[in-house]
Image (spheres, rainbow, N blue to C red):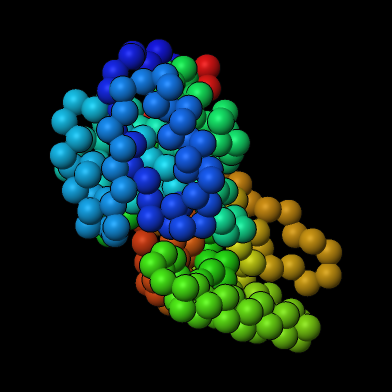
Length: 279
């Protein structure tokens, strides 16, 4: 880990964070402004969010928001070729269940005061990520099939109500499938290849595939076969590239659901980005 030098911060507050938990945003501002020179940015949407990061100059970027905001910031920096040389920090703020799962898995404190202090006093840790063949990035976890999740609208109360309705319907549908003995949503037959070697083929139905970026230049891959009777042992591997193919499938990459696709390849990029974490 590399110690963070004293410098000016650009704090970009995601609109959904202001709306869902304004008190935590205020606390984060108080802590950060007490310990550093801060430029405070309150974008109204994704375009303003991206422009703020693009025009930050020499300021160190700090995102106040949930996993969607963190991934959006990483994507913007990657698109402009600045991810490798930039140390990013995040103060997790999100009102939805599971909205901070990626930040938690990366080691970011979930308490507002602790996270803000880590921004000021922490160190840079270089982390691996997964990059897919369509330009997508994974920071925390890739999962197939995608868990049911409503879209991240992040703008209006009516849309939030719509999202709640969609989530409720999805839960009812999943409960009905489980009651009927189904294995869950998504495909049941996939070919999973790790560094060119077949880990599981189409003749073996699978319940789930999980791929997690490690810290050694390889991803941890786990395939859970669909079992009849006794629970089947998971198949595991560590690989630099992972290719999944089969019938149309959706996947969950961090906080985003993508697909359907018939094949996708993810490649580990070792030490591709820097995150400020507690020393």
